[in-house]
Image (cartoon, rainbow, N blue to C red; front, side, top):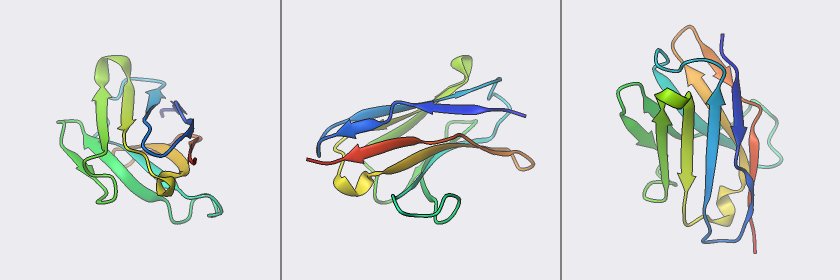
Length: 119
C-alpha cells in the first residue's frame, strides 16, 4: 500500500501561480498513473471529482481541456513526488485538489489540499 500527502494549496489572486506537491510513502516507480483531481466547493467528497492532469510512469501526460497551457504535471521518481504547477489561475480553479495513485489493483487518494483563487 502507499499513502499520499498533498501540500502547497492556499489562496491566490486571479492570474497567480501555485505549485502543489504530492509525496508518496514509498517508491512510485512501479505506479503507472499518478494524477491530480479536483472537487469544487460544495460537492460531496468522492462525487464528481474532476481529472485535472495525470502522468504515466513513462512520462506521458494528459490534461483537462480547462487547464491545458496553464498547468503542468511532473513526477520525480527519485523523490517519490508528483507536482502540479498551476499558472494563470482563475476563480473557477477554486477546489480541493487530490493526488491519486493508480496501478490497476491500486487506487489511492490523498487527503486533499484547498486552492482558492479570489480577488
